[in-house]
Image (tube, rainbow, N blue to C red; front, side, top):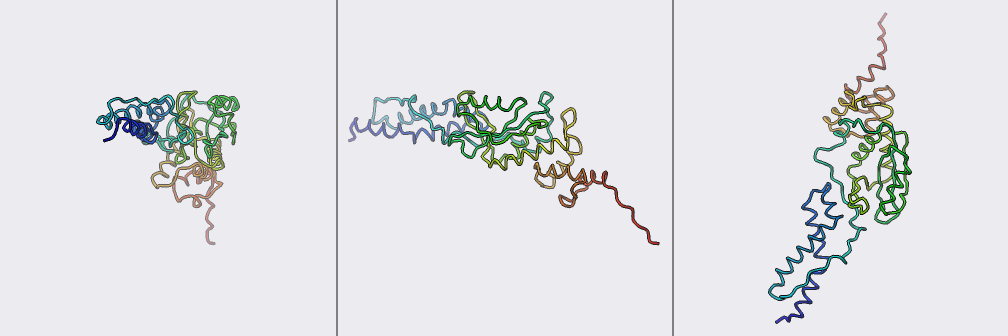
Length: 290
């Protein structure tokens, strides 16, 4: 027969280990939506509290025949490792794509001129991660505000100034880098996740941003109401219908075709895209035989 003392030892070793709490906390998180509430469950500690409650219930059921007196697991001294759980893949709403963002109307209150910035932190948890944001004011003041999150002063990786419609350009960069999009799960200072993080090479991130800035500046694709102009809607719809990728590089190329600086055949055989070129480049008259 197992003694009461031996049962208590078994009880303590089996149910106070984080090996049981971690999967239970993960189950609690997975019961919530991945976009916002899952991060809130993690950051607020609710997932861990639920894990302890469930562990207690499992323990009581499992040990009822062996132990009559049980002690509840204390939660206040259990630490959650932020190094491994700081970031999680960000999930956009169903139907949100780069194309849908391009086709959406720019908010009337959005800034017309601003800056894009790229930064990271020196802490190991941020290795390989790049924050991509915009500001309609001084970039340094924005970075100083981010320093309040408690990870030290941001390490600036790049800044683009005089960006037209900076908030929209920021969104376009985010959606083009969707496969690299992560969220910092919880900020204790702001009590919410920060979702503008990307696990990407900074050269790639800045190259994509540079192309979107160029397209927004040179093509002037949105009208005064913030609506995408009809010609650009046609271009995007054609690319989507023919399963061609909608990217910053493609949009710049389309504009260059319209301006006559690139041949249509070098990009795609499309009558819609050639329309702008025909308006600029006149056909040479055919010579008649004498």
